[in-house]
Length: 212
Image 1 (cartoon, helix red, strand yellow):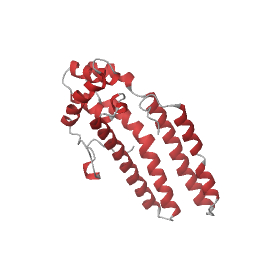
Image 2: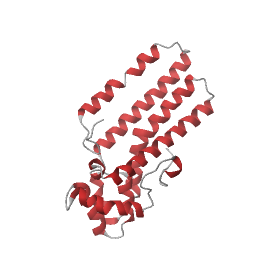
Image 3: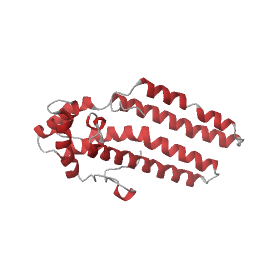
Image 4: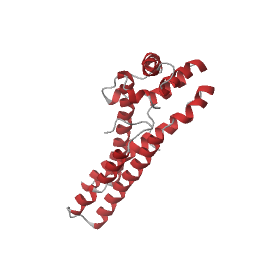
């Protein structure tokens, strides 16, 4: 995948995604399925496509423009919900929809298909958040140049405007850049109660919410 994430995704990544999105249609054409099931599978598939493309668009746009307000008042509630919306669209909804496709193809009952979809949605969201935490701990440049959930939680934990400004300056590559980001951000992330390296579902950060 591209290393240019968090507001600077390259066109090659988008083009590759668009090309791959048509592959499933060829696969479905090779399998003889009842017309009703085929329609349900297509509905799930296009749900995954719509959500993932919308989520990717939101991720490319980024949330850096919201940071001046956060620095001023320290209220991260709307920012957290906006970021979760992006994660649900680009990660949770596609995973859930594709899981439902598998359940449908296996002739599962409706409630079982729904439950499996919800489980995979939450699992995907959990691993997205766990990946954010791990990236912050490793000091990956991309994680220190965009708004991720550990950043949001750290900003919410800060008590003063100068503390919040330090984090924002680090994200923007000013006032010390990535080095300052690692030194300042990691302790604040840990203070917010985020585990440094989740290894199972029981260790997924507590701020995960169910998809709406």
